[in-house]
Length: 195
Image (cartoon, rainbow, N blue to C red; front, side):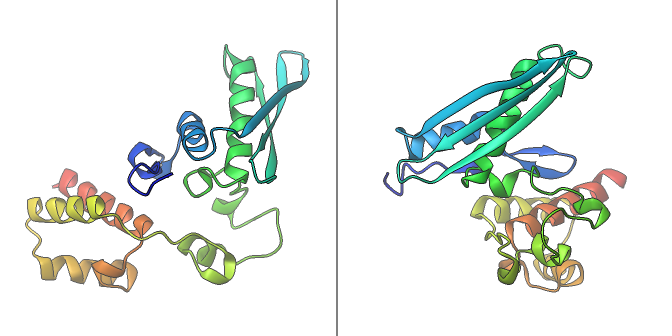
C-alpha cells in the first residue's frame, strides 16, 4: 500500500470520557485496507440466561494472529449478541495492532493503579516510555494547528502557549506527543468554556 493511500486512524478517532477511541468498524477498515486477505473468524461460545460470550480470531497473511473474547448481557443491550461479537472482534484486532493505541481494552485497572500483567510503571506506560513499550506518537500537524487556533482565540500568545506546555508537560509544544497535545487542547477549551 502506498504512503499516500495508507489508512490514517487518527482521522476517525472519537472522544470517549476525554480519551481517544477508535471504533471497531474503523479498525476493520484499517485491517482490510492494509491486509485485504486477512482472515476473521467469530464464534458464539456460550449463550444462556440472556448472556452471550463470543470468541473472535484475526489471522494476518504472514501468520500473526490474535484471539479476542467478548461478553454482554441482554440487560445492558437489546442487541447483546451483536455487541458481544463486536467486542470480541475489537479486542482481537487491537491485539494484532489495529487500534491498540486507541482503545483501552487492555488497560485493566489502570485508573486504580492495578494491572493484570507483570508489574509496570503505569505513568511511564501511559507516557510512552520506550522501556515499557508504550506508544508515544508524535503530534499531527492538524493537532498543532488546532492547538494554535484555540490558543489565539483564548488570547494566549505563542510564548504563553510554550509556557503552558512547559508547566503542564515539561516540554516545548514541538516535543509534545499526540496525547499531550489532545490534553492541552482540552485544558484550553475547558478554560475558555469556564470564562
